[in-house]
Image (cartoon, rainbow, N blue to C red; front, side, top):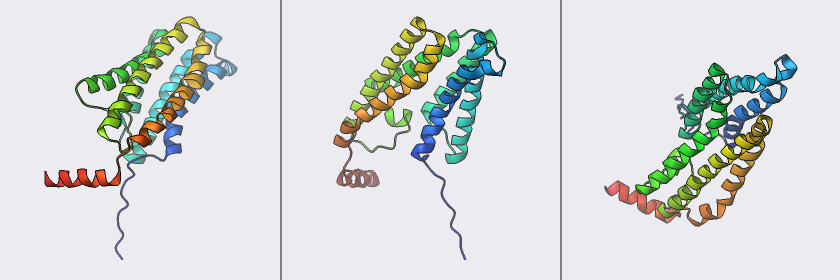
Length: 212
């Protein structure tokens, strides 16, 4: 009896993907909230949380790679920045670096998306590991919206960490940024439905690519 090899998965199940993306943030929040209960001084909580954040991020990336044998661009770039700026936070004992991380990551993604549009290349599918099948116009519109939204998130992070307490900033990362991002993503549903490629368009594109 011949046993066929099972092809590797190309995408994580939605719940698993959500858990891997939100898990490190949850660890960061809990570390900052409860570190003092384990004997750490109050002014050391953020550093403990940062160390846990780095470890949880690396674990999440490792699990993702083991599961699908590849790493998506967005979590990978974010993970690198977490390790670099989190490491500087711990090495120099300076909260500034970890607080700048969201500003840098979001600004980077915004610049990449809008910069790609300037050269006629909507890069959203690559940056966000997207599974949508949209028309070119749909990709351009969606890329433009997400590019602007990333810059809004960067600006919000700057306002919050510069004007509020560290505990408020940590809570805002978990209970402010994520709900805003999910709400924005859901708000794009009409655009996704309006610009989804129809079956006949896919066949036409496939035929053209086959003749090339």
